[in-house]
Structure formats: C-alpha cells, structure tokens
Length: 366
Ligand code: M6R
Image (tube, rainbow, N blue to C red; front, side):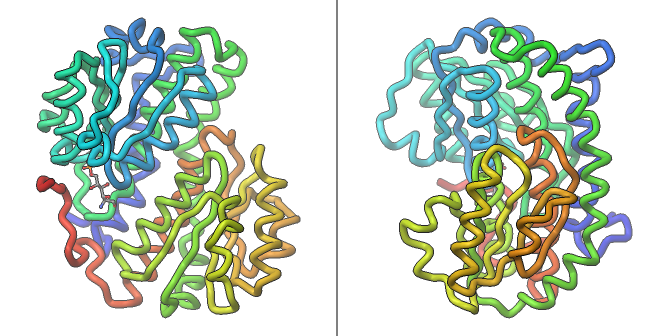
C-alpha cells in the first residue's frame, strides 16, 4: 500500500502534484476565470463582510493558517489572527457573533482545535472548517467548510495535507479578494493561471530529490538546525524546522529571518547549518543581507532559491533551485525540498519516519 515507496511519508510527498490538483479541481477554472467552492458560496457574503477572521489550528495546520493570514490580508484586506487552538481556548478570548473562525485540521480530531471551535460557537461566531478527513468531528462541528482532497495521510509528519490546506486557503483568499474588490481581475486571472501551473512545478521540485540526498548526507549528524524565511516563506521556515525535529529528532528552530539578530544569531558558528528560504519575492533584498550575516559568522548556508538566481548562490554553501512562481504561491513549492531534507536525514539516522517516537497522527488528548 506504500505504492513502491519505502515509507508512507515519501509516498505522500510524491503525491503532492496530484493532491494539490485534487484540492483545486472543480474549484478553479482558469479559462473561464471561475472560482467555485460550494462550501464557501453559502457563507461567501458573511466571510467577505467579516470585520476580522480568526484562524485556529495546531502544528502544521497552524503553519498553513499563517500562510493564510498573509494571503487573506494581502488579497482580501480582512484582518486575520492566527491562534494556537490550545492558547485561544484557555485565555478568555474576545469573540462575537460578527467573527468568523476558520479551523484547520487534517485529521479533524485534534482535541484543542475542536474545543476552540466549541468555545467560539458558544459565543455566536460562524465557524468554517478546512479538514481532510471526511465526516470527522471537526468537519461535523463547523457551520460550513471545504475539504482538502489530499487523500488519506498516514505518515505522522504532515506533508500533502499542508500543501492541500494552503491550496484551499489560497482559493478562499482569492474568492474573498475578488468579492471585496481588493483583488483586481487581471491579478486574479494571473494568480489563477499560476495556481494551475503549480502541480507541474511541484513535480519539478521533486526532481531535486537526488541533490537533497547528497546534502542530507553532509548534515545528518548535525545536532542543531536553524530555518529562516521572510514573508510568505516565514511559515515555511517554521514548517521545515518542525518536520526535521519530529522525524529526525534533531533540534531545529524556525525564525523570521529578521529576528535572527534579536537572539538566535548568537548560536551561529561554523557548525551551524542554516536553511534559508530565499526565493525571489518582495523580501529578497532583505534576505540577501541575512545570508551575509550568517556567512560572516561562518554558518553553513543551505539556500532555497528561485531558478536562475545568481546573488544568493554566490554566497551560500549549498543551493537548491526551485521553479519561479508568484510569492503568494511560493510556500507550495518552497516546502517541498524541506520535506525531502527532513525525510532523508531521518532515514539516514535510522529513525522510524512514519511513526516517530512520542507522536500520534491525531492528538485527541488536550
Ligand atoms: O490533524 P491536525 O491537522 O489537526 O493535526 C495538527 C497537528 O497535530 C499536526 O499538524 C502535527 O503537528 C503534525 N505531526 C505535523 O507534522
């Protein structure tokens, strides 16, 4: 059932061109510039008129929520707050009937996320769910929602569910942006065409596998890793670090690159691998400076860059080139090499990739 792959995680990483496509299929018709989402339609006006949106989730789903914050604020100009479900539910949050809560969960069974939904519901908020497992507790507890069509995810480390969540959230941001008039039609069409080309670009990113195996060999015995990104790639840095720690048991931290000088820079020496997600986007120039700061302290830079980039490759120790896309969609591509890196390092360290110690696929305890 692993389809010839050694582990479910690897199979699921490789399924992403299809799972992303399945998550947008029928919802995105680029030629006719149509966005259709039955789960959204009924609540479209309510969503579009919301004063703010609160996203609740845990773990990787929380990272997808962070990407959604950037997308919805940028494209639809609605304020978004992204909350760890566990913190939100216990801190007496301010919730009213005017609020829209989006809960994101692969399993649909995460106890804290479910409890956060119940709390928000009791205050009269409208709850929207993004779940992968059909008929799950969270899917049933929400007023409306959209499923991610990633298919069953068996590996404890979430991979294809993350990219499916980001795909669905991108569609929602686009729908809200066009409804509110904050996303111009030409820009909407460009983004739609770009989103349609993502599965083929993910396919290309997966071809980096052999190169990532080589890099993994060099760093498999590291005891620490730092992951840096800015803008849309900041949540990707968090996600890359989480993937590495959960399956390889190497300590890793994700940071917004600019925060480095407020503390983590003290950790950098010639032993420290620093994965920098530095694709061509609006924060590119800034991240070039961050790479310089790391190199000045002799850190080992593994850079994820846009194909054809010349500047960062002249500074970094190892370079992984991914296809170009709009910065709004970049997390769908930039996360791929990080998933592969964590996978190969974990395999080389002899770890149980699909069932890492101390972890369960769905966290049904609080
Ligand atoms: O099923 P959920 O999306 O609600 O799960 C949330 C987290 O438990 C989950 O993403 C966890 O962080 C993964 N093991 C990450 O790979």
